[in-house]
Image 1 (cartoon, chains in turn cyan, red):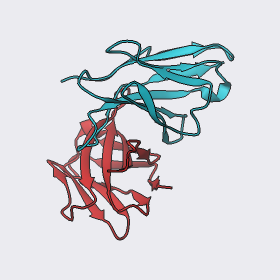
Image 2 (image 1 turned 180 degrees about the horizontal axis):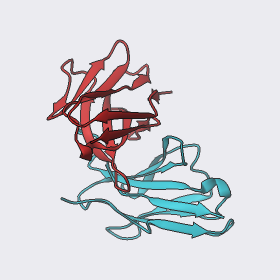
Image 3 (image 1 turned 180 degrees about the vertical axis):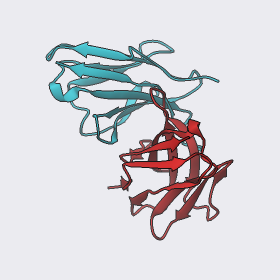
Length: 114
Length: 116
């Protein structure tokens, strides 16, 4: 069964550094998402991406964040200058869209900012 | 704004017993879906069950069933004949439909441990 994959599984970076989190969504899916979960808190929506552009973003997704689909398979989340509070689990997800609305999640990347 | 609340951070159940996880939500929308996702340790979230708000009948998937009370905005998950493999974090999620948004609103999760 096709799965969403994410790399790396764990990333440690220093404050102020740029990080790129990578995701390979399911191949026939049209909508792509990033969510994050700070330890002990709820999973929060960051951004959705459709037709090569951002379709929706949350207030968390500020100018430090960007997303890209550089080729037909990868979907990346870049954090330009990481802060301590960016430490979290980042989940990528993809979906076909309507009518099922089911999103398929990757295993997550744990980002630790020191 | 929509919110989803899971009031049970942790639960445990004996193998073969039945357990119910609770979820309440707040919305003024009429068209939405509700989901339960399971996240086993160190694994990705997978869909357990989905309920469309316009359907009165409660969704069922094998040992998993929901009690959907639309007026009360309640969406509980019942796991019958619990198995060790049901040990996981369970998230309740809400999504508006037909609205141009595709984002999930999640609850904080319930950690379920099935005891042998």
